[in-house]
Every structure is written in C-alpha cells, then in structure tokens.
Amino acid sequence: MAIVVLADGRAAVPADRDGEDGAGGPRGPVGVLVDDPRCGRLLLDCGAGVATRAAFAGVSLAGARVLPTGHGPDRLDPSLPAEVVLDHPETAPPGVRMLPAGGGEVVLLVETSRGVLLHCPASGPLPAGTVAALPSRVILTIPLAPMVRDQLAGVTVLAPPAAGRRVLVTGGARSGKSELAERMLAGRERAVYLATGGAPSPDDTEWSARVAQHRRRRPAGWSTVETADAAAVLMSAGRPTPAASSAGQEVSAGTSSGGPGSGSPARPPGVPSVTLGRTGALPDEAAAAGEVPAVLFDCVGTWLTAAMDAAGIWVLDEDTDVYGDATATGARARRTADAALARAVDALVEAWTATEGHVVAVTNEVGSGVVPPTAAGRRFRDELGRLNARLAAVADEVWLCTAGIGQRIR
Image (cartoon, rainbow, N blue to C red; front, side):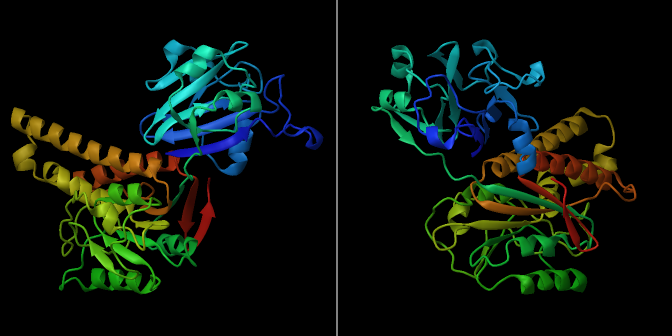
C-alpha cells in the first residue's frame, strides 16, 4: 500500500494561527493519493492546486478516481472532469464507506490490504452515529482536527505505513540502463539484487561474460536473489522479516539466473528456460539482516520471458503445426496460456503497486526498432510494451537511458 499526502489542509494556515480548532472547515486544500491492490488508485479529495502539486512532485495521478469529502474548492477542484469524481455512496467502489460528517461533508473509510483508512478533514464534531460506526482500529491519512480527535479517544489510531518508492528505468540494448539503476542505489550498504535472467550455460560465452560483468559491479554487501517470482520479492521489500541470508550471499528460489536485463523476445540458444517458482519461503529468503531496504529488479524483460515460458506462450506462438489451426483444442490451449500470463502480469503489477520498499526496476524499450520477424517476437514486444505502461503509470519516477545518459521523463 502506498499513501501520498499531497495536501493535508494545513498549507494555508498563517503561522500565528497554527493549531486552531478550524471551526470554519479545512484551512487549505486536501488531497491524498492511495494506491493499494484492494481498493485501487483513489484520490481522497482533490482540492484546487492538488493536481499541480502532484505534477511538481513527480507523482502520477493517472487512473485515480476522486472521492471528495465535500464540494468546496478545498476538497474538489472545479476543473476536474465529472467522470472521475465519485461523490455519491452508490458510486463509491467496493470497500469504501461514506459516513456523514455534518454540514454536508462525509468521512471516508477505505479498506486496504493493510487495514482500514480513515480520511476525515472535517473540523467536527462528528455525528454520534458516525463515531459509533468507526472500526476499533484505523489508519489515518491526515491529522485529525482537535475536536474530532477527542471524539475518537476510544479508537486505536495508527500512522500510515512508510511509502515505498518505485523507480522505473527503461532503455534500449546496451543503453546503460542497468548501470544507471545501480548508480541510483549506490551508497546503500544493503540491497537485494533481484536477478530474473537466464543462467549462463557453459557453451554460451557471450551470455556468461555479460552475467559476470553485472555480478562484478554489485557491491559486496548486496544480496542476490535469483528467481522469476519477482512479485514475492517486491511484496517483501521494506517489511521486517526474519534474517535468512547474509550480505553478499546468493539465494536461489526455484530458478537459476543472475543475468543482465537483456529482455530477449524469444529464448536464444544457450539460455535455458526459467520457470516461475512459487515458494512461500521466498520473502524470508529475500531479506538481508531482518529487512529489505532496497531492491534492484533487473529486469522486467527477462521476467516476462520466464512468465511467457511458464504459461506456454512460446509453444503456442511458434509451434504452428500443433496450434496454428482453428481446432477447439488449439483455441482452448491458447485461452489457458493467455489467462496464465495475465495472472502473472497482474500479480507483478499489484506487487509493484503495493511494495513498501525502495525498488528500482530495469526494463527494455523494445517498440522503437525493427518489427520482430516472428510471431513470438511480436507477441513479446506487445506484452512488454503494455506491461511497461502499467508499471510506469504507478511509478514514482520514470527514467529513459540513451547512449549511457539517463533522463527523467516523469
């Protein structure tokens, strides 16, 4: 779960009046972005100027639906498109409750994967029925007004979890994107290198040299996790877990990899298949010294290669003798493979969205060159392009690397 407070209603308070009751309502614009697999992307209030603050902070509001607690300009920017505003209980998404706050305002309760959020910019007092309807434990999005805080004396109020930071680095082959990603985490004493590439075979000297080069660049204090189950590692990032690997140790979780972010569209000769391992012990194995403070995910392209392999996509797209016809068996196999790949992609995007750690992910820009000559190559290009767009939509930063030069594009 990620909570980004863009404005908490206090920005417009003069210094000599800070801490007053605020009986006249919020003292400044309000806007809180919530990004969680259970509730999706929600913008709790979007007062005038909140969207501008988000843009200057590099926070994307793409795909976010607005849930206002009132209709004043401090809660709802008049310039917002009406179709993104969910201002009636019947339009609220599942897991969201709107309770009356008095004066035509509402209190929002939002169910997330980490607990129930309480979003209440109202100055109070709240109706007795609303107070009675609150759960025993809530996670605050913004500070409560003094009068409301007094009313909630019997409710356990929790601070929001620390927000993760998601950085996506994209670029073409040999563009320097992996080195750029490594520099972003330079100085970190502890980090996890999430390697999803194919393991080098003895007869593939080129691939072996590339893997060795990447391994030499990693700081000695970093741990390496070799797995295609990237979602499990991302979900464990930033969460306290029992220490299961020492610094510098390489951990294999169902696969063998450790290669650079080549993102090859079809498994080249000498690079063995990488299967999607699903091991419940992976989050513990991914933790170094009790917590994973940062993860370098290298790379999304090789992860997708493994996911397509595990789903059977390569066979469907290449073995035209078996699946190229229009038989019911072939169509059923294709639907099964497509559904398996979709589930794997959704799980990765959900983990990327919900991660609480600092994650830098490397991916490949594959749609700017020659059209791949094979069906498998074209399918890979299209799937990776769509996946990159989904990851970028919820990333805190997006960088493009060209000729060894990184440029932040959002």
